[in-house]
Length: 108
Image 1 (cartoon, rainbow, N blue to C red):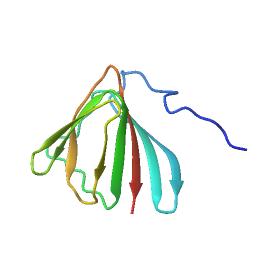
Image 2: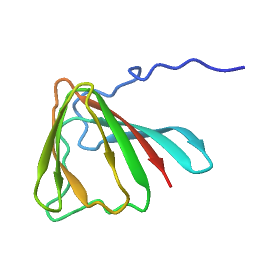
Image 3: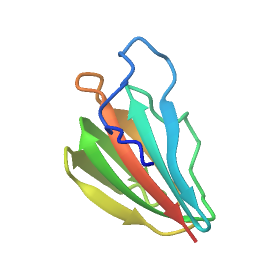
């Protein structure tokens, strides 16, 4: 029997110093994560350089991503984008209120 869950349930409050990551679905070459950010950003000098393709949507909040060429993308509620494998990027801003609720799909 399937269990119904809600993507907006059990969102931690803004008191945490860490992002909340939850793997909500995995199957062969696909992984889907829910990520809750409350002001967290990538450390200085850190770049994500992933072996997987990533499709991400911001379900709530605001965020900014920076890419290796120093271009920046500002995301608002409902915005989504595709990040090819090995495209270096980092998170430079996430809103606290409302918290950022991301849904990220990783695949080969």
